[in-house]
Image (cartoon, rainbow, N blue to C red; front, side):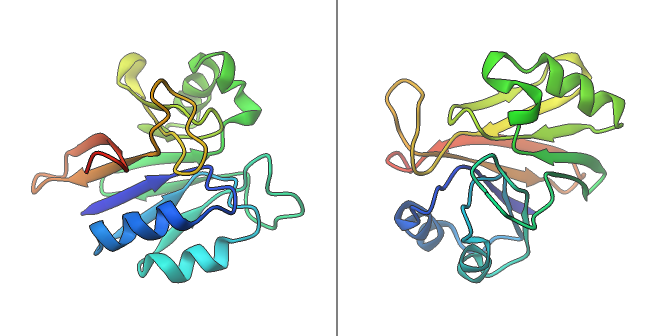
Length: 162
């Protein structure tokens, strides 16, 4: 199973369109908020199932602020992250994920990619395809793959370095 994890597209879809041309087909796309009303457009674009949550810039959205999904044997918490103060660190969001019984928590908001394996919960942030903030400011995303034994593997990728 091959899953694309993205966040914070902020109505700028050119990079997402370029990325999808290069990596389709996918089994699932996860968008972690700040689609800013373009969730239907993104759903058409990805050509596979889409899981999406609301971000802090998704004003008047009917999207859920967070949801729990299953990916293989993993219980995954999807949220944008702004309600857990992720710009100040990931301890709060990981504690909430643990309390909810999640194996993985995926969030956005900071526009900085991250894969963190500490404390019994895997924390993932794909960064942003539209407004990256990490050093080098390369648009980023995460690919999650489940191997034949059902184990998850994660990798951060940059649009300019494919």
